[in-house]
Image (cartoon, rainbow, N blue to C red; front, side):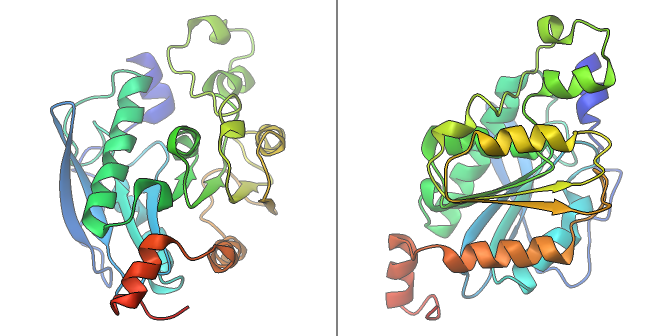
Length: 263
């Protein structure tokens, strides 16, 4: 459990703000490998896109309410954020990389079933740890678009920056090797990174970006550190990305039935 403590640090349900003001969320539950996982679904009446928010390590989803609010209120998106097993109200404990991936796949599947949007037409937004999950899902099945914030090449690469004399490349069970997978994703990418990131060096983010296919955009947030909340410039770039996306078949069908306003 040492790696889980060092790199993930999940906060139980006793921590956080579980009743945020002015966020029209619905508590949702879905199952993965016998564990009951919890999320917040914030639906927009006329969504420009449906987003699965894969959050980072530490805390739980209740600490991400402001990000979800901005995506919903200012960008006009339907958003779901969830907790991996062992985080927040989700059952179970982290027990390996495969469990993280399984939880993320289950969340995307649930979101697709709830919204009627095919899994490969969901926008994947991953921050830090969640960036590895976003790359994993996109490399497997595609995505309407991918947004990565403070992403890393692999978890052993991050560990090497902090424990230079430890044999991390041989001993770590969590690999989360996004660099080896991002080239398998064919679609729009927005990647942002804190200029003074004190957890994941900016150089790692640039290497990951170089491995990605076009179309892609890279944004550096000047003066920011790893845990600094996203800038308004980031949300503007996110907004611009959504504007550039072609209309999907699912959205076209919803528009035809009046479920979506014309873009």
